[in-house]
Image 1 (cartoon, helix red, strand yellow):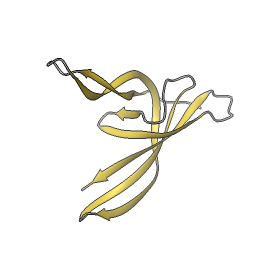
Image 2 (cartoon, rainbow, N blue to C red):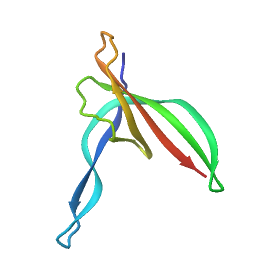
Image 3 (cartoon, rainbow, N blue to C red):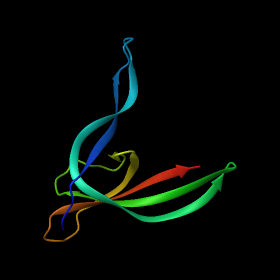
Image 4 (cartoon, helix red, strand yellow):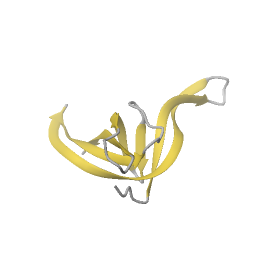
Length: 105
């Protein structure tokens, strides 16, 4: 499988100094990998009077990429949350990552 040449940042929740002796929760970039991301499905809903769309995606990254459930992936302005990571039994040696995003409007 050809993964593509788009840069996808893998981020993990963590803490960083807040400049006042404490720590703030933040997303820390673990790595930037080349890969691709495609939409898989979507559904619209209305919550608390606000229109929303839940969109699932599948990301394809190289085998061995450090990505885990609970991480988030960034591709340009798109942010998706990792739901599952699997290694399909193909000769190409890649990971398939199920992810989701919530669009509001």
